[in-house]
Length: 463
Ligand code: PLP
Image 1 (cartoon, rainbow, N blue to C red):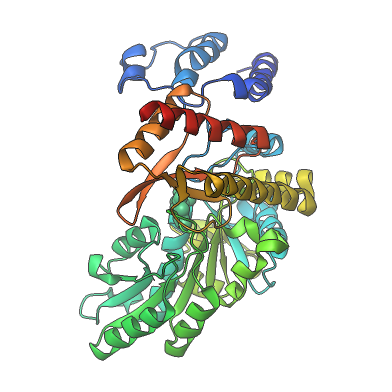
Image 2: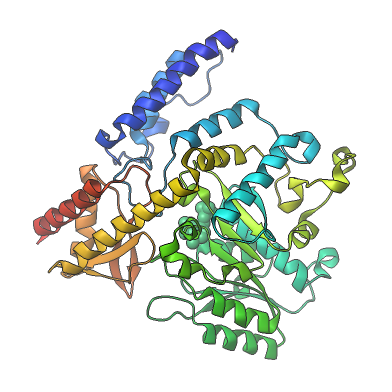
């Protein structure tokens, strides 16, 4: 594409982005197409000859966009709501344009150094000491797997050469509420399903440190090897906050690696009013925080912090001849910290976000989400028909209708059908509950009041 053509279509594409974000509030957040709708609308094979970029962009708008669930919509409250901010979008655009690969320092020096700088800035914003070194991965699932690979390296040093065969079974402990990515990592690392030990939770669905101590002691007696404990700060179901300091204390008694899953909750450490949720998290060996969840950075961007980066590197570092460099001995090679050799310039969008909003700006945005969540929870608590299904933690409200599961579920479906809001459900104490996750940069108090009113109308229509 000649530069002049890129200029024309680039301007059009950027104009489209600006308009999309400007009018997103009036677009249905979710439409329900029939599965297969897009495959039917598109040809079965790629075109033999190149097409006009204008036609391609028009098809994107006509065929693809209407079938998207709009995570950028202010009425998006599903899963863990996130959003792409303007500076994040521009960072992503420029990262694609320069298209560097930061395998080693020499393959793109500024990329390696910007990843160091941005992860250090973020750590300081979150109150983590400089002893933590960060790398940026695609997702928390990868970050957690890499952290547990480092834990495996310390627990079973002999496995690096010989594999796990013939060694005692390794065990990873996480609460009953921990994310499935922990179990996936356990599977991928060869520990088998039995390698994952689910620790009971208390009434607020937080890991019980006494149960943890008991589980570790039982495993040791049986000749199994405790490998890692994974407390979560903001669980997926109800945003429960595991008592991280107490969990770390138990893990330390037994010399077990602690990986803190703060994929969702981490950015809230910016806000003093919830600082106590994070007290002691710096005692972990590794921590994952996802700027692509609650720090207004477009997918994908997951920061893995480790106080023992040398162990992470021991787990993954293999340097073939063609990647040896004269700077290798005194610079970081990002390829050493995970499976991926190729790494794109993910730090750029995070750097743009941190500079554009500033620490105080980011704190203000998250504080506002916490306020909106408290507001919505108070509406639920004051209502005669709805109840909280779990104590409010961070910006996730978990609630249900008092008339039972069918009404809860139907009310949620009806609201989703309006296109004004998008909610997702889970099950708590065998009851269907709705999760309202506030994390979108465009969500306002009026939006939150609107979804409350829609839910009440929907529930009334059901009864
Ligand atoms: N940890 C928690 C607590 C999560 O809620 C999630 C996803 O929602 C993950 C980890 C996995 O995140 P990712 O999609 O970045 O792999």
